[in-house]
Length: 166
Ligand code: SF4
Ligand code: SF4
Image 1: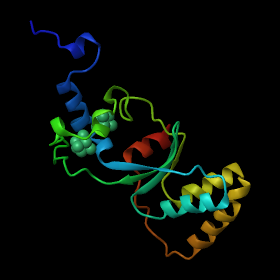
Image 2: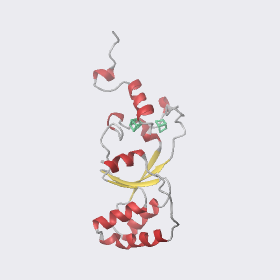
Image 3: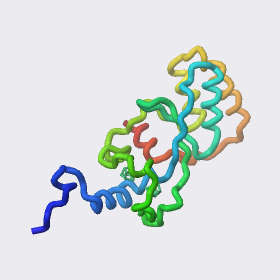
Image 4: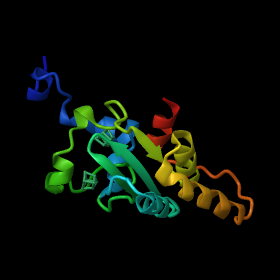
């Protein structure tokens, strides 16, 4: 009989089990973006700045218990084609301190707000009738009318898609 590892005794997954979940099931979501804390939007200027983040491809804006942040999609250079970390033993503390037992894949989606583009923002502001966001919502609607018709390309991060379906 194989010896039980410390991880199993603690009810936690072994390193090997976790590696399979991360690389095969989750496909290493948390190694494919970085986050930047942003100012909580309290003024027209703040909403305008959130719009500015959102009109850039590969950027989403979310809010969780720690506040508002921009998610910048960017794959870590240590991630190989099979979604394995090539620097596991020497990975940065930010990766080390991330709790894989309660992460965005294994735990509940932590976002209270997920904005993937400026149309999401316009919808969000309109739904909440936010006084300080009205001018921004109007500006977005006016700007969108200037755009040529586009196909419905999917820009959403898998995590955000999952959140929007809940
Ligand atoms: S989000 Fe969770 S399951 Fe996915 S790679 Fe990161 S730690 Fe692993
Ligand atoms: S160093 Fe490894 S664990 Fe950290 S983000 Fe890169 S691939 Fe992921």
